[in-house]
Amino acid sequence: MLQEKKIILGITGGIAAYKSAFLISQLKKLGADIWVVMTKAATSFITPLTLQTLSKNKVYIDLFEDSSSFIPKHISLNENTDLILIAPATANTISKISQGIADNLLTTLVLSSKTQKVLAPTMNENMYNNPIFQENMEKLKKMGYLFIEPEYGRLACNKEGKGRMANIDKIIEEVKQVLINDNLPLKNRKILITAGATREPIDIIRYISNRSSGKMGYALAKEAKRLGGEVTLISGPTFLSSLEGVAMIKVDTALKMKEAVTREYNDKDIIIFSAAVCDFRPKKVYKGKIKKREENLSLELIENPDILRELGSEKKGKFLVGFAAEDSDNIKSAIIKLREKNLDLIVFNNITEVGAGFEVDTNKIKIITKDETIKEFPLLTKQEVAQNIFKEIIKNLPSAN
Ligand code: PMT
Image 1 (tube, protein in one colour):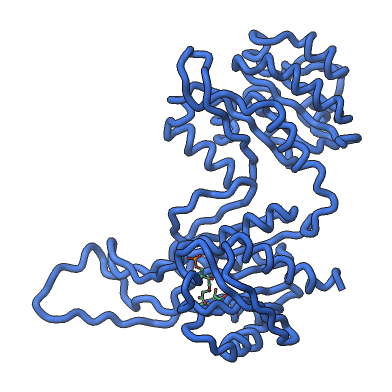
Image 2: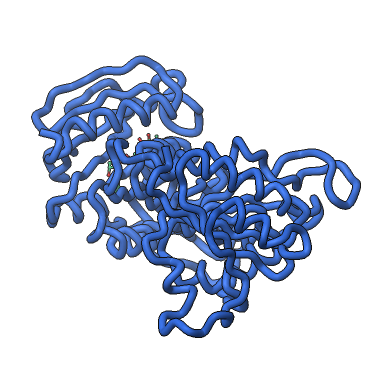
């Protein structure tokens, strides 16, 4: 299954390091070529000789050992690598990676590699929940690093809590998911998705916005990732957690969303606009907080750019998907948006239907393609809706015809 897949297995200093022996043995059975890189601390928990015997490859620890080669070790080891898996990954190593610190062979290797990384954290529960660690982990997640959540159970400190390294079967499953995705329909496709509402400030504490929760856009990003795509999600403010393996860009205003989209657009293949961009913003943003006053306050609003329309006018060969949030079942308005914004597909969303549109976990949509054929769907979860949208996108992608 993993024949011809080269995996660098990073092992750091936690008690779960002894499980690496089983991990190597399972990965070898699946045909993978394993190269172990240990931190010094890891060698206190398991011997390099054990891992060398199991992996059938030299085990590396020291950045400067064996200086006979002209190519630095972190560069030569990285060559043709399909995956860097760090299991167990301690708080120390994860935090160092998040800060770009390269003070041993493993962290140097990670910093110099573009390969997909999968990390299986293990630590004491207080360390795991510490906001400093959480912030470091979130930062890496946003950059596309994949994390296999630790499990609940007895920890090395003799207490029960969340912090045990995920079990070996789960780690193997994740490795398979990452490496055996050659037939996935969105493999090698770069997808940009916008989600949620924008916030247009009135003063330092007040803003104009709308009810979009981001759920529809996040469901699309999750599905795109599941189908093998390389996904970037530009999100307005939301309570939803960042998605594993998806590059996240957080914005607040329509202008910032436009800036991020313009920056990301050129190297993407498919762009999906599910965000509810505010059409207007206050002309003047008050400094400080507007004080209560006797007379009424009038706000002058000016129009925000229509980001999707601007992209459509200079399409550059991209597959463009829009949403049309409508307050009736009149589909004509969505068809006009499809034509005027030069889209390949539009998702009609009657937000007055029960269970559809803003905030809820379900949606009821119609999909209209460029040739103006209309496909209607029943009320479904937003994840199922996302699946149907991608089925249509894939059917209509130029290379699929
Ligand atoms: O986030 P949820 O709570 O899950 O809710 C999902 C949703 C209802 C927000 C979503 O399903 C949806 O319908 N999104 C589109 C909302 C919208 O702004 O529709 P619109 O008809 O006003 O805009 C048409 C298209 O132009 C949209 O793709 C929109 O992203 C884009 N647009 C709109 C205005 C603007 N200034 N710039 C834009 O790019």
